[in-house]
Length: 419
Image (cartoon, rainbow, N blue to C red; front, side, top):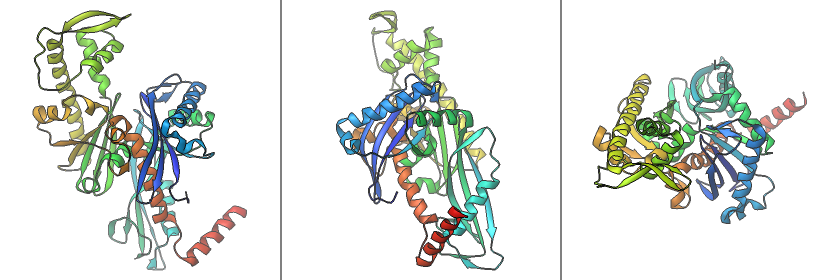
């Protein structure tokens, strides 16, 4: 992207939601132009493609609906738009690999060609599971001689250059089906990002990333853990403990279907301190506008708080194990995702678990307040920030600097093209 204030499209494909967003990359930030969100329909289930043709039709229609929004005038007349996709599902993973190159002739001034060499080498020796496909490969930090955590090595003198790469992956077969759906929709995707990385980019501060922070992103079907330390992501994990767990508990407790339990959860789920509902009754089942199987709301609320406490305790227990596994001590705690929309969520954490945590709110984005405070849009907004971040990285690590280096790279690219 060479044009200033380039406009791009972000798709967020979650377990249950599809978000399309038009954004503009600006010097020093990003701006949201238009957005549209809807529930996933035919062709998808759990964030995975079940039928390519139907999935492609849904993607195409979502993009058209984005263009037809009031703000969509910003993109209607553009014939070509770069598209990026953020994925949120249970089959995401991440891996860390490092390697170094030595310069036998002695110290040299590092150029972008050296950075590209060590990145390519590290990717080539990365022993990833054959069942996983690569979404993104990002340099987390560089090693220059014995100095680690270097962000930009170009221009420094060194005998050794190393890099630590963070490679984000997804189960290969499911990923290929998603790629096919976008291809069938004639949407040219420039890059895919995992939800763990996108939400981190949206809600975490640079200070938190340096000091150590655990992001617990509570979604419908999973809890996405992202652990940061020293400014780089130390690890990610997806726990099968999303809001569906609470809905399943409602269904098991009151002997109703999962579909009915999800409706009851949406209408009556709350973590607020126990209010007095008196003799108020609530329906557990609604059929053809008739309410059936009513119970006292006070009883429902007490049981819901009990189930919620067990659910949060499991999440925190798994999160603590995850932290210890990566050797991070006393990190900040940040919660994000649709789970944080539960009434009284943060107060419940403080009261029941004495957890010193904050709620993640989208930062550094020029957008309407109702978009930035909607947890369901954080992944899409973070995807927009990631695109801007990657463009900065490309310029920092790989763009030729100086006339001689640019001339050399032009000649090298010409030779690679024709010989």
